[in-house]
Length: 410
Ligand SMILES: [Mn+2]
Image (cartoon, rainbow, N blue to C red; front, side):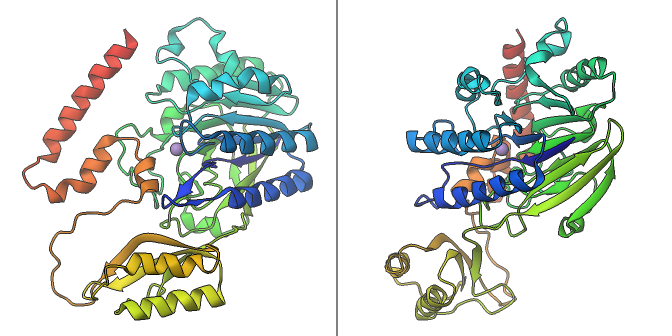
C-alpha cells in the first residue's frame, strides 16, 4: 500500500493580518499533483486543519473545491481522504461529506462520541475506508479522545483484515513528546501519549504539529530522504506551508509504502518547494541592527537582491525607533509590489550582559490560533502577573474541564 500523507494546509490563512497566501497554496497543490502523477499512490490522506478558520470565505471554499476536484479528476484512482482538524468546523466539513462521497472522496468532520467504545459495533464503519490494498481509519480532531475508542476502531478493522492488508490510521492530535517548535501549546493538558493510540495500525498519519517528525525517532533523521521502519510508527507529515516565522525547518509531504500488516514502512520525504521563504534580517549570528536607517537600507537591499519572502527584523533594543518606522517599511515594500512581506513581530536584542527586566511576551496571531488550551496562554503570561499561582490555576482549569466533560457525557 502506498499513500501520500499531508496535513495542516491552513487554506485561507492571512499572515500578519495582511497577506493572503493563495498563490503559495496553489504552488503547493502543483507539487502535490506532480507527486500524484509520479508516485501513483493508492490514497492521498490529509490529516486535518484544511482551513485556517472555522468559517472560511466563499473564495477560500472555492479554492478548496477547485483544488481537490482537479486532483480527483486527474487521478480518479487515488482515494482522497480528508479529516477535520481543530481549526476546521467539524460540522461544515461533515455537511460536505455526502456530496464529496458521490465521487468517492472521503470527508469526515465529526469524530466518534466520547463513549463510542461502549456502543455496539457498527459505529466504526463511518471512520473506515477499505481499499483493495489496505485500510484507512479516518479520525478527525476530537477534544477528548479516549484510548478505548481508538482501540475499538483498530479492532474493528482487525476483525475484517483476514488477508493482512496494511492499516493506516489518521488523527489530528497533539502527541506528547513531539517537537513543537513554532507552536505555543507546549505542555497541552490534553496531549495523548503514543500508547493511547492503541495497537493495530502500521502507520499513524498525524496532523496538528507543524514540524515533520516520526515519533520516537531523532529530528536529525528529517534531513534524510528515506527511512525504513518496522510497522507501527506514528508520524507528523508537517504543515504544507510555514505557518509562522518560527518554523525554520524543511517542510515535506510523506510518501509511505507499507508491504503488509505488521511488515515494513518505507518513508520518503518529499521536500516542498515554497513560493516565499522566511528570512531574519540581519541574519542570526550577526549583530542586530542599531539604527532605523540601517534597517531601511537592509530592507531595500533585500528587495533588490532577493526580491521575495517574509522578513522579520532583529534590532538592538537601545535603537531609537521613529514613530513612522513600521509605516515606512510597509511603504518601501509596497513599492516592490508586496512580493517582500513584513512580519511586524520584531525581535529586540541587547548584547550587554545587563539583566533585562521582565518583558511581556509577544504573540503572533498564528501562534495564538495554534493554542488549543487556555492554560498555555496563561503559562506564557504568568511572569507578568506575580500575584497569580500557576498550580492553583491549573487545578481550577482541571475542575472546569471535568465539569464540562461531565456535562458532555451526561
Ligand atoms: Mn491543528
